[in-house]
Length: 208
Image 1 (cartoon, one colour):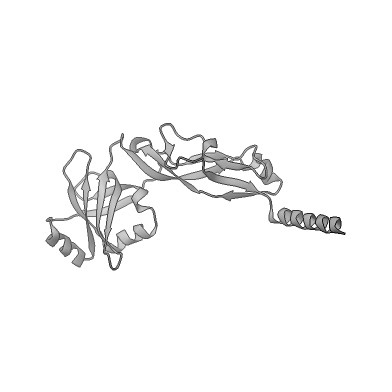
Image 2: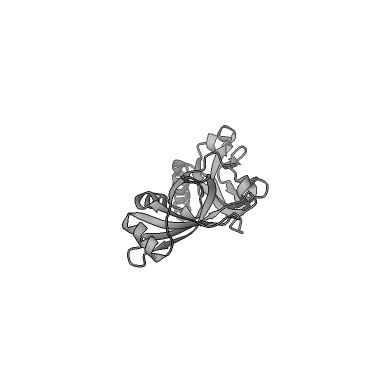
């Protein structure tokens, strides 16, 4: 289970319809709705600058949040839609969906690398190049992993780690079907440069 699910703080929005939504915007709030989970929809509003900060952090539509609303129990939600002003591209409404433990969701899960001391490629001066520090997985809301682990033990310079080589948590699967690269062990820049110079010298000698 994810160790730290970020909070998303909102307030109850009184009234519904376009008039109430416009009033919320005049007060520097973004109106929204929370639906699903087998209970009635809940009209909410979020402070404009607060929501904008979350949006600028990226991947707002694929993050799990702990929604906190005064007078209501905390609930896990995921954003399903952010409506924006067509001219200024600023948020005007958000739709949040409550999640049950069995709900399947797509989330970005961080990648942790271990076994650096057992990696022959790193001991020889190689460099770990991380292609994907996070991997988007489809998981159940009740079994969201905190991270996925890549063991570098036994890898050498030139080796590549693809998603098929990583043990994923039970029930989790990548959203991308192809066997994409997560990281690789590349040669140190000095070694790469030396190899190119040596190859050039050999070619010159052959031409002579």
